[in-house]
Length: 545
Image 1 (tube, one colour):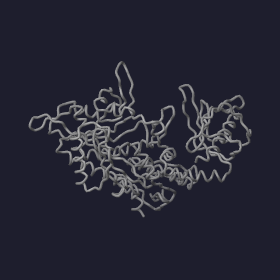
Image 2 (cartoon, rainbow, N blue to C red):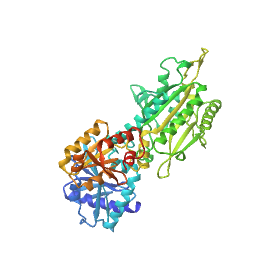
Image 3 (cartoon, rainbow, N blue to C red):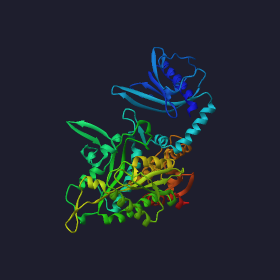
Image 4 (spheres, rainbow, N blue to C red):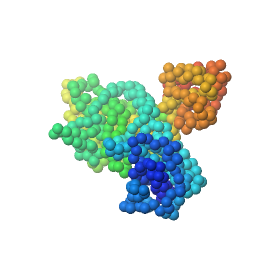
């Protein structure tokens, strides 16, 4: 990839000059990870066709460059790149524009960003586009862009993601599933603010031990922090009224937005962001309830991963022990660690040890999951905490009337929902299970004559809350089928005159599987079952074959 960059930078310079010749105002050129970019100052958008019309490889052989700026016809275009130089020996002639978007460098200006690649030969370009197509199957950033799921914008801030409608659909389905899991374990869902006075972070220890990740500011004489964790807020809910032994365990869940100031160089798509949502949960319980609670959490965690198609040998738990920087006594840490070990042993799971990788307030069980590419991801966590209840002076009244400290368990199964979306996109290569797919069915009428029947099929599915859409016969059927496959649509229904007259559909599934003469009602019945059961595989087409 690095070897292409001098060529791309030269191509960006050529295209910038072409754009100036066409009356546009490019202000900067630079390099991305897989392409070049040109920022054009413009109050209106620029279409792909307009950019293509500007491409002309016949430009000046040597463009004046002064102080890292292209100087041409009274225009100065900044070169945002100090590691790659522009070579006069390169002569890129073959261009491909990959994306056009807009952003605002300041409140009063709009830039159109043109991203593309350039090569000296058509063969080089074709080889690169073939490689890029394969990369789009396994890089969640490219999958997300291709499927219109999410985006990042400079004016919004680094590491802060915007989920588009289709991406939010995936998140909503994940949250709905986790709500069912939480309900089965007796959780009560709560909501807590994004910002709190730093007093609670000082009590919890985050203010000192997590200070480099905290976003802190002052307002009206008080210091506030944007929350990096949900636990202190859940503790305050627990403390809002007296609790007795009969109340315990108390289980709070929250799909809580948290913010952690990761270093800019560590940001990476959805896998490393500064703002994200956790499927968070905290349990307040008696010490004698601890082992059974952890066993239930282990069991439910494994159940969740099985639902996504991960087998037992794809799931690996680890016990993470006390780190060097931590709070609490040796006695409390030993009790917490022993509780986790007992629960793991009784669950029959083989587990490894991660020395000194526990949270600063307690030991934990971390689950690693192996994806379809053989990579291991640390996702679920179960943490036993005797220390925060002590710091916040939590109490419950025991059956003998004595006030005692509850134990606290922190747990997340997905972990970061945003990060989990990235992992799923790469694991399934953009072809998500039907229940998660933003578009579950696309209807393709062969001709406009059967549009009425196609729309009836569409509306019948939508009434059953199936995410369906229609692609009318503006292009060839083959191209529309390919578009649906490329966009990760789970099922394609093709309808022509024969299907309209017989009340049938031709069903196409992934892997170019096709089943003809299927009664639409039968397809609908099977699809509702597949979605309702959250099947990983396309069980509808399997039943129809």
